[in-house]
Length: 513
Ligand code: HEM
Image (cartoon, rainbow, N blue to C red):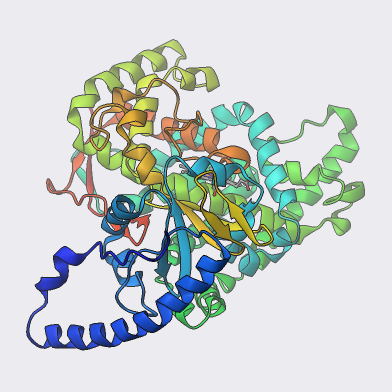
């Protein structure tokens, strides 16, 4: 029954402190024991009388709860808690109780309306504080994004390919002598921003350096704020939100710059459409999809366009697209640099496909890149966060999971995705080891064993774009360069709290021939 077994998952480490530290720890421990003995049973009792909540993992220090171990070694905290309490349990982190569910229960949480994606998601912080016009009716921008991926992606593949090639030439270029790229994360972000800006924003606008700078800065900052420890949440979550979203709100007056760039383009498009009528060929970008919505742009009148909503939709698009795609691309680049044993086969595949399509890749050619697809899928599988896809329980009093545990209203539930990634039944033999050929379906396919793009009704609508973007990028890199880690001892993946942190270390590029 919940909260009654005061088991300490970290008891093995208790003896490592010495001297004054040891005394200090003992004093705090004694003090906290007294507090625990007073408060925990009272809390336990009140809850027990009401519901069968998931067990709260034992913690030593009141207020701090599991925050320290969550931050320092989240993987160990989760694994040991799971061993002792089962797959559903509760932690006390940054002043808040959060419940963790494992591989058997997480699909229920993902699929039930009683668990809100929008209220649970960390990105809400960004959306409400920085994109207020999108936040007012979030379904509108999401619908534009979904439509874009449904109808436009294959139409823009040749543009994406061309832009990827150009961006690689610009940012990596000829490497007759070995060239060390010390910050491959930044390089990949630059390439992806340039490529994606064209198809999202329109070719005319995607060329403006000031706009590209905004997208880049915005993505950097949004990645950074995800890793800021939520210390201020001990006082109130609102304070944390205000502090981390502060720099984003003032980022180079993004609204003014983007607005000054899109207004003339929108005006020109309306004029051409009026003049040419049905003969006008609409550009295949997300900007145009926004303009096709009569609520956003009524009567082809530039003065009536809801520019704020268009700008927020574009920034949301960029934020959603850039941060994850560039982060995952950097993990793939490192794996590729490290794992020479895969090169031969990947190179052969790239050459054959390139020959068949005369160097002009279309959607169907990308579908043929099965080996590269598997390599991308395996890298992503092993580059997942430990916990992911938070949901807030919005059911009136509590929601009862199939395992009988009752999740109280307002509780955030995190999904233990690493439990899925490391499960032998789901992943096959040696699930913690890299084996690119363990997969027999594409990285875009949503299934129980692969949760990188989520599942259920909020599953990532940008996954085809992301995977195709990565295929274009690495197909080009494989054909053009030999790569190796700048430092033989490349740093393994590191976690910051429950999130996988950016990889560190340079990569050396050299022309293949
Ligand atoms: C490697 C790249 C990417 C990864 C790993 C990724 C991952 C995810 C995941 C896990 C979710 C589900 C979140 C949840 O259920 O809590 C999600 C949702 C979403 N993703 Fe992605 N994503 C990627 C690229 C993209 C791209 C390129 C876009 C394009 C704009 C995009 C747009 C979105 C949007 C709009 C949602 C929310 C959908 C909704 O509200 O229903 N993502 N993504």
